[in-house]
Length: 314
Image 1: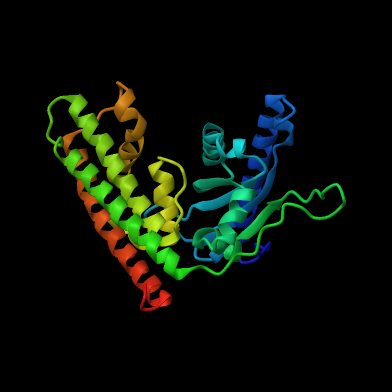
Image 2: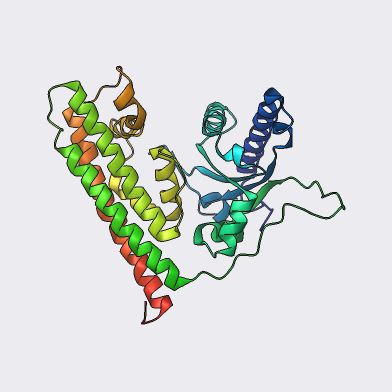
C-alpha cells in the first residue's frame, strides 16, 4: 500500500491531515469516556484513503458545486467499534461542519480480522483498496516481542468463476427486490393522506437501496451494512460514475428531493414532521426506475467480463 499524497495539491493534503486529526481525536475521547478496561484496548489500526483521491481522479466543479468525496476505510481492533454506527455518524457530521474540510467524508469501518479474511478470499473490493489505497495512519505499536503487528494479509487471486456465480445471484435477487419496492411506492404516489405518501416514500427508499446493493454486491461482492442512501450512492459512484446519470443535474430542487428520499428510511415511518408531495414522489420514482436500469446494465457488463475470465464452463 502507498503512503504518499504527493500527487495531491498541498491544500488537499492539509485537508486530509485535518480529517485524520479529527478521527483520532474523536476516537480517543470516546475511549476515555467509556472508562472501562475493554474500551481502553480499542484502537484505530489503519486509516486508508481509497477512491478518487487515492487514484488521482478526483474533481471539483465550481459551476455545479459538485466535488469528489473523501472515501476512507477505518481498520479497527475490535468488532464493537464497527457496531458504533451512531459514533461514526457523529464523526462524519463533525467533519462535514469543519471549516478546513471542503467536502463530504465517508467512512467504512471493519476489523483487521475481517479485512484479512476478505483479502484471503480474493474479495475484489478490499483487494483493490489495498492495492490502490493510501495509508493515512497506522498504529505502529509492536507486539510484546518487538515485532510488527496489525499486518494485512496478501490479497489472493480473485476467483472469477465464484465471483460470477455469486454476482449473478445478487443481481437477480436485488433487482427483484428493487422492482417490488418501486411498484409498491408507485401505487401510493397520488394518495391524499400523508400516511400513504410517507409509506410511498419509505418504499421508494428501499427500492433505491436495493438498486445500489444489487450494483455493489454484483460488481464488488461487497456492500456496507448501512441504510444511509447517501453513503451507498457515494460508494457506488466511486466505483462507477455512470450511475450518477440516474439522478439528473445536481441542482435545486432535486438535491432536496434526494435528501428527502435519504431521510425516508427513518423519518417517513416515525417522524410526524416528515412531509412529501406527489411531485416529489413522482420525481423520486422516475429517478429510481432509471437507477435500476443503469445498475442492471452495469451488472450485466461486469458479469460478462467475469464469464469471459472464468472460461466457457461458467
